[in-house]
Figure 1: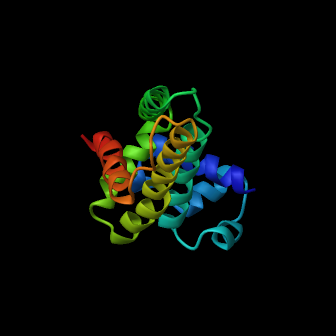
Figure 2: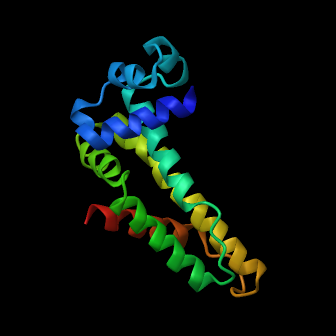
Figure 3: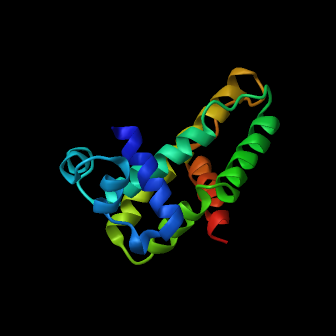
Length: 155
């Protein structure tokens, strides 16, 4: 049921954007009740955040080309595929709406920013393990890199 609801949420966001995104429409599309949706996510914003986290983790996890340079290039290719693919409109719609919705902004921070950051930390850890880097990149540097990578989507 979780997957059906997430997929329905992504479809509706892609088709109509955040303005027309309702939990009722998502539940109907998934063949579920709104009660089952609300047992999983307490709000429309939380459901949208779960959908974006799903997109982010599905596309960005598991990258390991054997080199840090290759990993970062693949990371950027994956990011571009997200934006150019069928889920791009959903993410851009949510990012645009977040400027006007503090709850959505916080959820996207927790679900997208932190997911991207986690994936970048994995890439750095792999590079340290392969001895491409002498030491792990600091938390501040990872934060800046994450913001740069996410920010370019808005540009």
